[in-house]
Image (cartoon, rainbow, N blue to C red; front, side, top):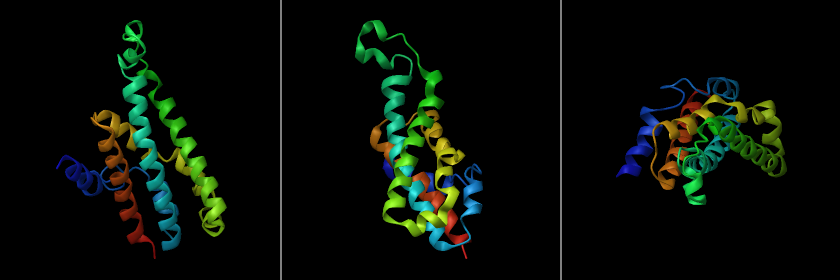
Length: 165
């Protein structure tokens, strides 16, 4: 029940575009054609489906206060939460590079039509917002983090498609 509630809430209630106005630049830039909007939407879904769970793991096992206790009791007092933005952005940039390589290899037409907007996923505020919202909402488990990553991007995807002519 918790998964279903999080899924629908992330798509319809907490929609990144309509509720928080995040990701508007790429939303408006690629919504001129349905094929481009679908391509970027799929890339964004993939990036968030990977980065939110990875960033959840980083947050739980490295960044939070006391998260390093698995290394030993002498590390239990360390708090690396000040590194959250840097670590989250590094994870996102890595996944965007992977997506860019895959799209260029398997769909050169889509790669050319997306142009500069594909690498700009890395600096899309909605992408970082997904990881930061996951952290601030204190999502408890890895499957819930994966669910949130996929659902929040589906909300963005379902928002971008209708305005494409």
